[in-house]
Image 1 (tube, rainbow, N blue to C red):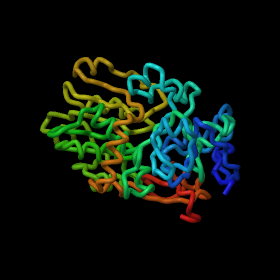
Image 2 (image 1 turned 30 degrees about the vertical axis):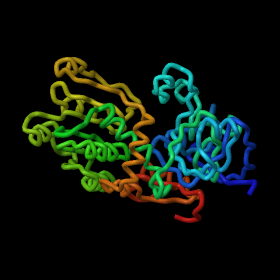
Image 3 (image 1 turned 90 degrees about the vertical axis):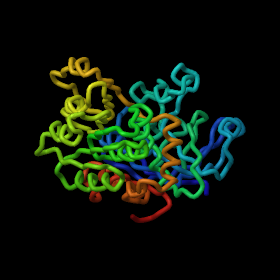
Length: 371
């Protein structure tokens, strides 16, 4: 067919199914037939407050699909063939800056939305040809796309877990250094927190503690965390979590603390308290506000390593796909809901509790008609 449908974010809190002509494919480009796209919590920011500068856009960056077509230069660069099932990273890096040359393409200015850069799921229809998101039957492929071949036999629905799981691997293992015999504390049982549980379990951590709140959503996710490998899932509303971790570790405290909680800044302060001397604190949950009266002296006194974390590396996505394909740690249970393209608004509203109950990782499959 020469036309296709996409769910276009046309204004804040609203998408609309629109029909488009397939774009022309040139030597340096390609076209992806979308099989499934994961719903990421970061989609909510664009959906809730659609930036005027971006205009209407197609959201969705956890995309898995089949190579439909590609030009000669793209084929040479990508070393793929038509029909290959691939998972995309959201980044569209320049490929030539120091960050790209050193393998840290996620830090490339060309793909940084904060600097007006391009990336999948966050680039508007006003940037030709406009089909930069996965909530669609087809997605345009830039020459600098970062691809990962999906292992044979892994369903697209579960392959969309690659990016959230890769964040867990990046933060917990590659950057946090989790390993055998260690105690890992994870704050926040959302997608990223649960992915960190999986990564800590795979890394051989001795004790894995995850914390959340006393509400229905967090309780469901804390229960799932136990299935994924957490040793303790703790509701922190009515307890002293620092004292509790002290009891569970015999006073040693945590080797690694990963703050995946969004919203309040209290979890950053708590993370410093939970870490042992010479421990590591990973800050992954954006607060979008200043931390009042932050005691930086504690970092010095405890000789802490504190790292801010952004996204994933190529290596972590490759490891994530292998882990998902292996079937270990019940990781596929993180995939809780499947939607059709026409239910994109419902899926996005579910991110903030206004849709389906107790979602963890949701997927939009453009080829199904109903939930």
